[in-house]
Image (cartoon, rainbow, N blue to C red; front, side, top):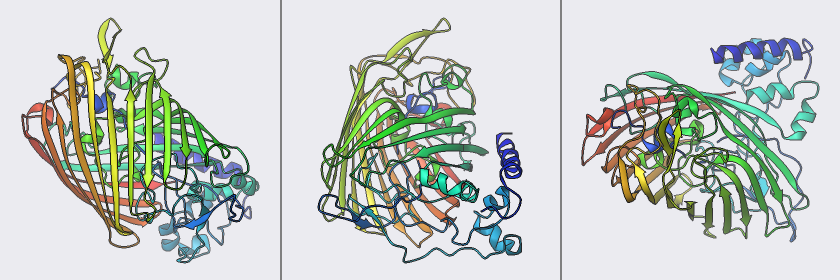
Length: 548
């Protein structure tokens, strides 16, 4: 229904805007990091390039390769989705469709042009940070972990919707404003040895089905943190619909869909923040106010920004979003530090479980640009599980604390590895963590609080991603992990877990991507998968992402 409405709206907009032609758980328990309140890091996209001052001693700016930051912003050369050098003439809808190279290839007579070829020698954009270590595309990010990044250029990629908008009579003014609207549709299908639920694995939770994972719409303006002569203001608003909403859910942000009703599909305003960049503090400071994706982690919530369609168990059960105020300081090209005060793991300040919570992060990149370490003391408070009454029923919310660190090493630009580990603790917790008091569903979750766990309980583990670029459009990902949930506070089932996954990413273009993969997930201590009936499961599947 929603995709049809969006298509109808775009068609109507084409008639309105264009001048015509020439205008330019155990069953019943919802695991914590699990669909119910599980949190988690890092989105994807673009912005037009503004003229930047030449490099000087006071304003050092060195060129760097194309890339995307951890939150998905493309920071370098435009890909084949760049704004067409010879714009297609016609109505809004025609200009929008021209953003998909395959349509021009199939129907060149309709657009009066051939598909644009991406340039190999486009000039690199100035930046004050070290050069991006990887190429993006094909990788979803060209930067080492950590965000927001100071001294990295905002992206200037234009996806089909903005290409069409730039062709409007006021297109140049919109482009100069750096305000963008874009998004994507991501769907997946999987074949699993589970019958009812793939949990406690995440995202592809319904076995042997095709599902809409993410229909996402974003409006944003990225700050220009390369320049050093004025304060700049930016913002991001991201709205998401699909089954993945349950992994974005934060108490107080329309969380009743999951925490009260345990619905398979839902909507979530995952990112709602304002950034203010102050060039005069250290070598640049960005202050963020609102709700953002939690900063640590190799993996991130948004489909196009991951190496695989599925996620590690380690990622599944840590923080997804935070709401508060965060300051990020660039000390020099090697060191960045950040601190924030927020309302607790996956909770809004107005949520009844909210509690003042700190976060401190340090990011280091070696001068040769081959190594990086990013460490966060994340969600620091009294670590006591939050309990309260909802609709006359005892409910609650996770309040775990943890330290998380990622080491990244580049063998060469096409071959690198990333290893992340965390140590997590919580007091007086409940098996399965944050509960949904909604009905128990075949795919998992629901049923209210699990068993009480007195004292302090621990969860810890490590995950490794190794990436190898095959071509300018393809790369292979290998993911291996070891993870332990001592008392089942996070997954709902205590024990030692491992998972091993391999996948291929193929970018047909910068607007269409397909990722097949196969993985084996196991709890070596007791049955944990398929609603506690299997020690392990195989999952083979693929997802496809179409940007607009």
